[in-house]
Image (cartoon, rainbow, N blue to C red):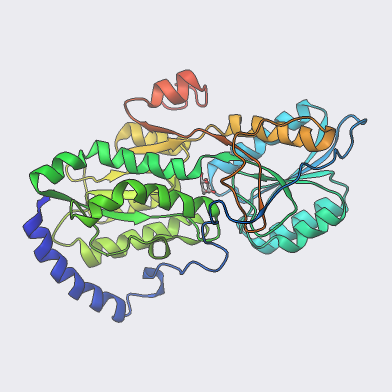
Length: 393
Ligand code: GAL
């Protein structure tokens, strides 16, 4: 933390450093990828039609084949998501074709084409790139195969029947609130003090990332505006902070570049990241730059992955957002039952998730902020998500 006067002086030198950094071949990796079209937050209350409830696929028939397309096994959460969906659907008598696309858009398209060709009667999709599946989604619709969007909204298509996710703007709000409370930003403002902060936001082709950034800024923007928070790189917009495909490596690279280019004389106080994978990258960059427990920044994340929870307990990550993926899978399974048998799925949002073509009826689970004070209670005792042993407790 520094007095504001010092920050102002540094801000002036930062502009000079940035000019050198940007023009001085700090390599392409330094630049945040620009958000491409189709990544914009869908207009609230826009004129997209309401998605219609589909006719049941197999009302009088037991079981059936369900294709489950997951984005990647590179992060622990999706392995858990895929496993949960398979287990819960199989327990209800369905056959499950579970595929992971390893963050390769074309691979995911082929996997979904194969699911259609090999007789899947319903598709559950967590997209690698939410707007890149429109052709194969139209093929599914043509073949009478309903689609359910899993955690990530499927954009630009009318072929999606339901969406199971978390309150994604709420995730961002929870991250912003965590930073605000943990650093007592109102007290800092009163005292004329400031903290440095950098942002590592999600993938531009994932609607969740856009909403998360909106939620974070809904809380933190006012503190950036009045100088209580100082972002020395100047990168606060979604376009400047989004990291394609949620890449841990890119987050690490950016953090290394930021520390070298902007934090040689002053510590980074807060790394506001949108994903546990980013928190791991930031941790590695900080260790490489010689940060220790004495000047370790506050680091946020999302997903409460096992490794993140261990890092929270040992102090190398400060907080995460717990999203109970078992609960998410339960909700998604009720949607599969709805499209397969004409049952009523539980829906709790019919207005927010406009995918530019239809407003998709959704069930949003509630995200919970966790840090070392409530981790055991929330994740182990209440949710039974990990055992105390797994966390080394
Ligand atoms: C998002 C999801 C996050 C995180 C991220 C990277 O779509 O909302 O919880 O898992 O993907 O996998």
